[in-house]
Length: 192
Ligand SMILES: C[S@@+](CC[C@H](N)C(=O)[O-])C[C@H]1O[C@@H](n2cnc3c(N)ncnc32)[C@H](O)[C@@H]1O
Image (cartoon, rainbow, N blue to C red; front, side, top):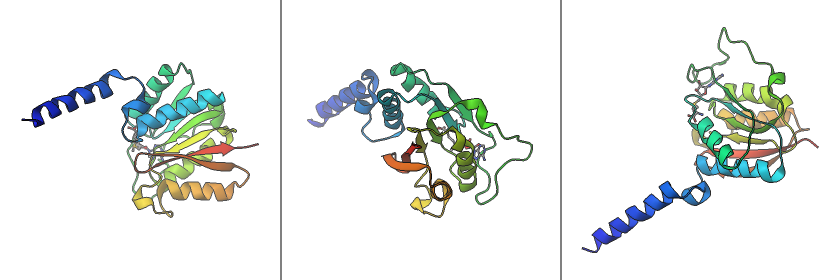
């Protein structure tokens, strides 16, 4: 019998937690994407970092929408740019620059405050990092959604691309920042 009031209590508590509270850091039990977006917005605001939000691998835009609403809640108005081939992921290991696609020119997007990389594979992440290199500034926060995908193997995926990037450009200093979800990792960039 005691199970029924307990269940009702849990239902009520979860309703309050997930529907009424607006602070995602309170709402989220785990350190997931919502929490990461909130932390990133706070970081930009508290450090007065000026620049754009750029997302690579936007697909249907659920992360993009999450950041949009988070920025609004924090009264931040960052220019937001989304990139995708909308062709899904290429075959792993293939050079996945798609035929017929012209590269964007980095000069169009100003400097970056926040960069979200959700391209999963090595080649896509490598191309993205090369693209954003001229947009990096002191305080840019790079967020990899799949850094520890492929069982976290250092020779694969986003992790490999970032290790190579750091080796190729040692003048770009990097600090480990927050981890999120089960496979996400973020880094701060220092250019001074
Ligand atoms: C895992 S999905 C992204 C999910 C999305 N961020 C979200 O929150 O729903 C990966 C996306 O990366 C894109 N992608 C992968 N490699 C790419 C490349 N080389 N150029 C452009 N887009 C690429 C795919 O088209 C796909 O939409």
